[in-house]
Length: 368
Image 1 (cartoon, rainbow, N blue to C red):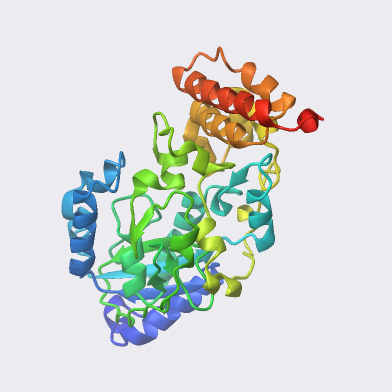
Image 2 (image 1 turned 30 degrees about the horizontal axis):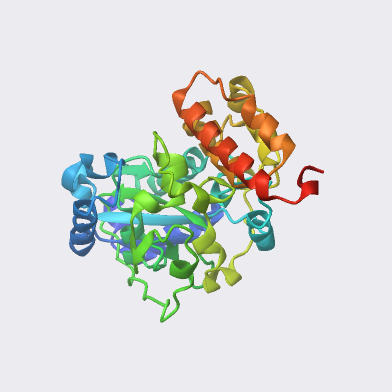
């Protein structure tokens, strides 16, 4: 006979340890617990919004204090179970090697495999059901980038890591290559000790940022961030920032690639997070040749699909404009000059002008 909820909660610390163990069985590297007080993070969040550092991400302001006060989003919430799942594909040199090869596409490591949202939510749902099997019905709701939730401050309070100067969460044992998910619950679970900051005087992430988007430690101006420009921005990419984007066509991992704590990262055991369709080594011109049907087919189940074909071509055009001059690239760009989308045409014309200008000063054998 399973214990009742009331008897199981006679020893909430024991239940918390059981939840951690069940979480590990389900593939989470870390499970932590916190209360719902995000008052300090709320001040930081609204100060960030006031500076308009969220750019066009209106959803970051749309829900008011529901994002910073869990009980407003899910009434009855008294505790948050925070979970971390590793997505690191390994072969850390490959990310840096790709950035050094301007004819190949760089895709953020988190997007090389299947979309993490559904996978993490399903695992959290299974964890919640396992708790329910043990104690009976309880109030809960699971999240993974799927609602107004301050994931990083919650994870920091739950002891899963600290927010680095790049604003990502860092764990001393696993680095920063992991997804976060939460279970909001009415269970009075004992909170863990918040993680301490171990960045010290290191500024590697600030120094490496191609567009200087990290305007202060922990403060990222999204309007300058390549991840924002390639994923969140729906319109034209500012011309001044295009040359700084290099060959990054979906996201940017520079700040993580140089973080000293990521030397402790280990490859993910999740096959679904491993690279698909050769996206970890694809040539820019080959990806630019995808028509919409091929784009939809090859990005099925991938977070990249949210871009849509038009923004996919926009991003690739910028990368091709930044590549060394070649006849193959110019031919590929010329084929898209009459694309139905004004957004694509604009970025293709810019890229072609860059190619032509670079070609005038390139060595004679640049196209060979």
